[in-house]
Length: 528
Image (cartoon, rainbow, N blue to C red; front, top):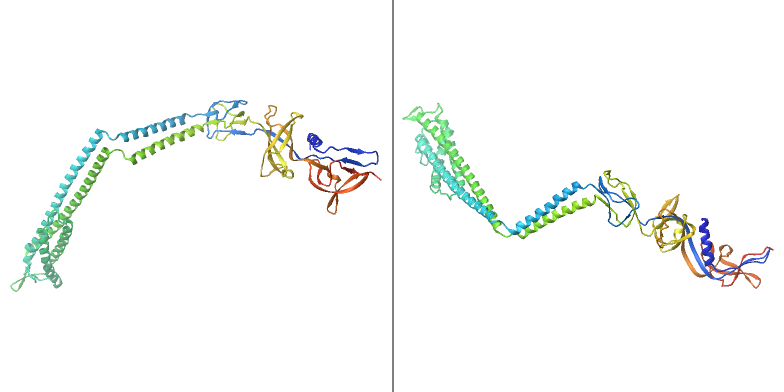
């Protein structure tokens, strides 16, 4: 314990401890103490450093060029005072653009609430009329395509009927009966197939004729087109087999019991019939494709008309609540963008978060400073505090609110200060291999003599009792688990049993019971 700390403890003990008198009756006499109730103190002595309650290192949040420094070392600063700033030309341009975006969204809302102009409505009405005309024209074209397909279906029937009845029946006997027979020799299987297919085609032509006679624009034209193609294909296969038979030089035409050459006219008629059937198939396919195209055009025209009509209705209708809500949301989004840029602008400034004094100003106008690089330091100008580290063996005594007596090396023992414990860290700090606990004390009042960084000598009063009898701890006698103190009564020294309590910082033992005010205790017995 430092010399001055010892001095203070002795002074406090002299005031608080019971007044005693030490008797020495000469050489070889007892040393005694008259005990009286007094103050009983527990104290912890440590050292520390004076520090500001708040000490902050300030920096920019972004790297940039310094455009202004508005403080120098030693200047007093106030809360939110701008201390330095970076170049903001680019951000200012972004801010102007963002604010223009807000204005544009507000203008759109006003336009939405005002509704469409008469000119816009007239344009939409013209578009709707044009779309209606386009639909009408598309429907006319569709009817023309339907009629074209009907014509091709009827023509296909005519060509098929001519190919069978007009071109090939001359090669059969009883062609339209229930037993048509080809009248020239051929391969037996081929001849049988031709006779059978002629019978079937007769039924096909009969049914087909009924379908063709009932054709109209409202008929199922695609179904009839599919049927016609099937019929034509069947007739084409029939004609292909006849072509094989009539063009086979080994086949002959039966005439009066003799076998003559097949007439060239039959070959020519069969070839013409096959060509006509192929033409009919091609014409139907083209007509079908045209009809499907016109159907698609009608659907497109109907969609265009519906779109034009909806747009016209939208122009004439008042603004919908959903559209207004959407536009207002877009305004809020644009305003949020402005706020975001303003936040970026703030990041280009250093502001003081406290009232205090600038202690470091480490930047110059025009220099580039990196993000998070300390540029300015400030300390608070509130009452200063002391930071100390209390050893583990003493920390259990120290608590928030304990009072302390302070002396500073700068002013010596003649300038005492008062302080109070304001915080004790819950976790340890290892200093020189010893567990300590950071403890902060605050001066009782502001004093201009106290400066940050000064060394402080601290005596913390951790406990105080009044009206307590105490004796030096060294005179307590322990016997069989009982404690005794020697007392002089009527010239005789006796041992009195006592109950003890706490031990003070100066080694005094609290006597809870067994002694009373005025008792004379023996400190040192006389030598025999």
